[in-house]
Length: 432
Image (cartoon, helix red, strand yellow):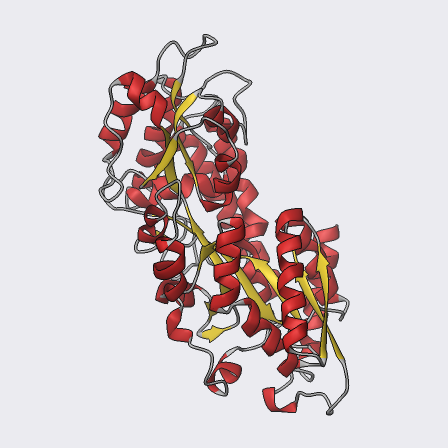
C-alpha cells in the first residue's frame, strides 16, 4: 500500500514540478542576504563527521550561504524518505543518491539538468570525470547527476592462507580464469569445518553480487532496449550454475546454515576464507584488523572481464529555490579538494581522474589501490531501468531457492524472468 501511495504522490509531483523548474540565471540571493541550503545524505557517523568538516570549510568560503545537513543512515531507508520528501514538495537542495536508486528519481523530472550550470561555469571540468561515470549518470541523454565517489567489486585475498597453501598471490593486472579461480579455491579449502580450517571462497548469492558472474559469461539482466528481462538465457544459467557448484559440488564455499548473508567479510577477517568479493567500502574495516595480511586482485573472467560499477550520485533538486547557491555547494562537494579529502580520510574512491591517478594512487597505501582504478575500464552498471527496485525481489526470491539447493538454476531463473517480465508489463501499463 505504501508503494502505491508513493507512486501516486510521485505522479502528482511530476505535474506540479513542470511549472517550477528554475533556470540557472533566475537564482540568486540579493546581495548581503543569507541563504540556507539543505544537503541530504545517507552516510554513517564517520562520513557524516567528515561532511560536516567540509561544510564548515564551504561556509567560510561562502559567507552568504548556510548549509543544513540532513542525514538518514542506510541507503534504502534514505531513498524511501527522499521519495516522500519529493512527493510532498519539500525536497532538499542538494542530495546524495545511491546509484541503484538514481534512475527512478531521474525519470520523474525531480532533478535539475546539470548541463546549463556546467556550460556557464568555466571552473568546472566535466572532462575530469571518468567518461564511463558520466555516461551512466545520464538519463535519456540528460545529465541529472554526477558521482562524488565510485566503487567496483574486486577480490580480496588472505595472504597468510595463500602462503600456507603454497599458492602464488594473484596477479593484480591479469584476472584469473574461472578455472584458475576454482583451482585456487580448492587449494585454499583445508579442513573447513574445523576451528583452524578455512574455506577457499565465500559467495554472496544475492543482489548485485551475482551480476559480475553473469557479465563475465556474456549474459545480461535486460535486453538491449530494456524492454525484457533476459536473466534466463543459456549464458546466465551456465554462469550461475558455476557459482552454485562452488558450494554444492566443489565444496569450496561455506555450506552450513551459519554462513548467511553479510557474513563473508567477518569470516575473511577471522582467517576462515581465502577469497572474497568486495570493494572500497570495506577497506576501512579491513585496515583496522591487526595482523590481517590481505590485498586486492581483479575478479576472475570467463568470456569477458566484468565487474559491477557502483556510484554515489549527487544531484540538485529541480525545485530548489536557490539553484545558483545549490550549484556552488554541489561544485564544492565534487571538487578535487573534496574528493582528495574523502579519499585520505575514509578511503573513498574518487570519480575524478586527476584525483584518482594523482593523490589517490600516489599516496602510500597498505593495499593495491590500482586494482580498483583499473577495474573501471570494464565495470558495468546494473539494470538501468527505473522500475528495477520494484521487480528485483522476484529475482532474489529465486536466487535464495537456488542457493539452498531446492531448485535447479534453470528452473529458478526461468521463474524469475517470468515474474519480472510480468511485473514490468503491469507497472509500465499502469504508468502509461
